[in-house]
View 1 (cartoon, rainbow over the protein chains, first blue to last red):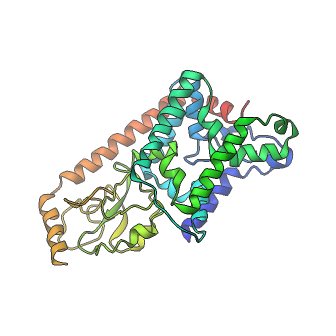
View 2 (view 1 turned 90 degrees about the vertical axis):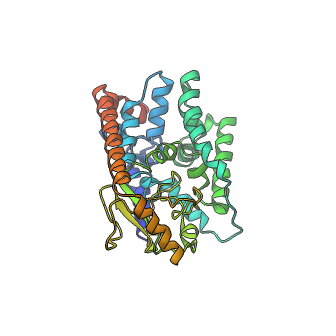
View 3 (view 1 turned 30 degrees about the horizontal axis):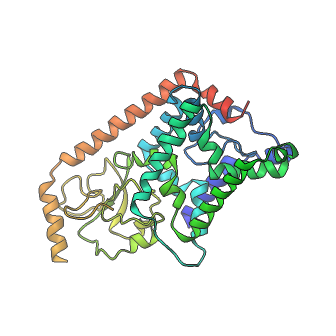
Length: 284
Length: 57
């Protein structure tokens, strides 16, 4: 429940420029220079901050290295890993809500998680660098939801520019909306370039997930409540893990830091317990 | 349960202080590299470029 409050705040606060909707203008103040560690389109009329992926892509398209945007994401990643994906991201929130709809549920194949790295390398960096066109933003479902649809609704001049690309964008948005009802967080796991960057930090971030092999019964309930369908007991530093901490309802899993020597406070334990993979267990 | 305990026990025996130190070192290196990256970007004036791009000016 607390995570839902944070997610609601993550959706509302970065989009607090309500005047943008009333006057059909974009916020152009100093805050727009700040890249949020969230997947939130900066072309949304109410957006206060910049999208780090949009900024990286812009730098790639202009033949420059995005040190600032990458550094912002890296600092957040080094601190909390993928936690912003699990607790603040508005698009993640939407997918979590959609998955609550009761219907047949499926699972995403394991290889799908590699696609988000491809999206980062190809659509965000390589193709914009070669073509000087912001291809990821053009196809981004969050951009369609947060910017494309509001602008088309509000502005007649934007409506007049609707072409085939707009309908491709709508199709991509609908694909992710419908698939979010059937599988857990399909966009975050298979397509999100920001999540791909944050994934790289899960192993070395300050905040860590600790697992106690002595109390774990391998019941698998952690996977059932996990928003990305992983087994944190198999691999607590899994790059897929969103650090939402839902699984810490189980006493065998706990939020900890790299500096904590004995996260479970067990007597006679040496330092370094927790956040470990048991030998012989499959990587989740 | 006994099996799990022995697994955990083996893990404990094999692991004195090395992984803990490695984790702290990995975090410190990552944090230092990240802050350097961010500081270099700010030094190059990329904040303004991000603002201009984000505001679609």
